[in-house]
Amino acid sequence: MPFFILALLIAPAFAAEPQLVWKGEVEGVVMLRIQKKQVTAAGEGRVVGRPVFRFAQPLPERRQEVRVEALEGRGSVRILDQPRADNGYSLAVIIEDRQAGSSPYSLAFYWDGDAFADEFDILRARRRETLTWSGRAEDEVIVSCRRSFCEAATTGGTPVQGGRARFTKPLPDRRVTVALLETSGRGDLRLLEQPSESNQYTARVLIRDPQPGSGDYSFKLAWLAPKQEPLAVVRPGLHWSGRVDGTARITVHGRAASATGSVTGARAEFERGLTGAAEVTLTKLRGRGGVRILENPSEANNWTLVFEIADPGPGSGDYEVQVRW
Image (tube, rainbow, N blue to C red; front, side):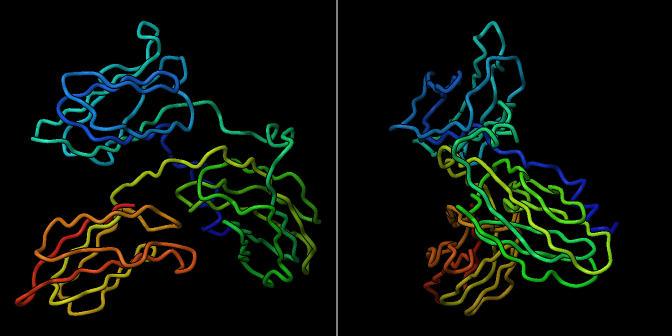
């Protein structure tokens, strides 16, 4: 078996995704108490204004260890109390913001929730979304489906002929469970990868055709449409630094960044690649001029980000910019 197929087989089925995202402006020391699908705040400090939060799944009424990740915030965040029977299976988290004034915080919570839809759930659902693929394949072929298109890659032999895909709706840019419901062809077909953050929410099907020549194949993938859009999780994606004289434009695509204008010593350090539609924020860590977004990632620009640095002079200035998505 070719090496890259082995890599796909041993890859984890899902990347960890938060069950709850909470965003709010905090001043002082605040304790968040989470129980089922409720979040309350208490403590000597305060939450300024109205916080925003959304659950992917409720916090289950069972003993477990929850993890919290501070996506944004200048103070400390720690878990005070894990879900246990004696606290009504609730979670307590302390936010300590000791500096003057208030500061925005964004927290992601991870726990073992109820299982995502399985094949039986998809089969019995009255409403489900599907994609149907057909084509002529030979040897081993991996069909990768993302959003509203499918691509077929062969490990040898003749390239796939007549590959076509029909979608009732595009695969969403978020975690869903897909089921391989209908297959036809003289060889074997099986689901190789579920959509996840780590594979840019791509479903992959492996076709093995054992006989000489190519054969006709088709399959159908089905999934349940997500009930609601997830709250955007914004994490550090890129740290950019360089010396700018005048105006510079930085273009980011995937895990690559290029600059136009008078820029020297440019350096781009990626935490993760820019994939699909994303909520992008810029934070200028260093520099005397202004920084602004010119183009947000979209399908129209092939999911590319463009931001501008304007240095007022005289001469050139050093800049550091943190880009989050």
